[in-house]
Amino acid sequence: MREIASYIARGNAARALSFVQELQVKAVGIGNVPQGFPVVPRYELQGIRRRIYGHYSIYDRIEPSRILILTVPHAARDFETVLAPDA
Image (cartoon, rainbow, N blue to C red; front, side):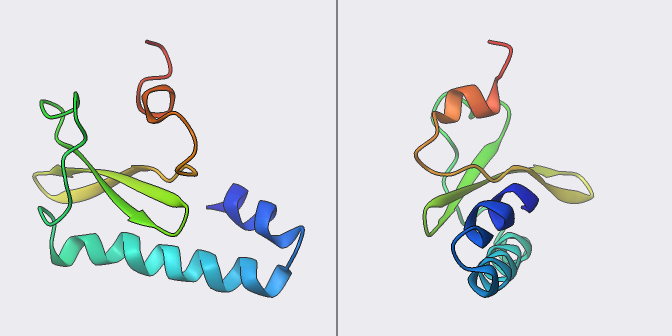
């Protein structure tokens, strides 16, 4: 989230703050419908899901006592490299 805010702030500091807040609300909102977003193809066994907001993808995994936000990359990034950087 800090990287996203820094990038947006280069052009508009106020929008950087408001966008990151919106993104955080969307990430927290996953808890209201934990299975409401699609499982990422080829990551079904790991249970990784993706919620898109704007040009960003929120990747998460449901765990027994929490929902873990894994990463929030720009949607243009290759999600395979983001989810499995060592592969």
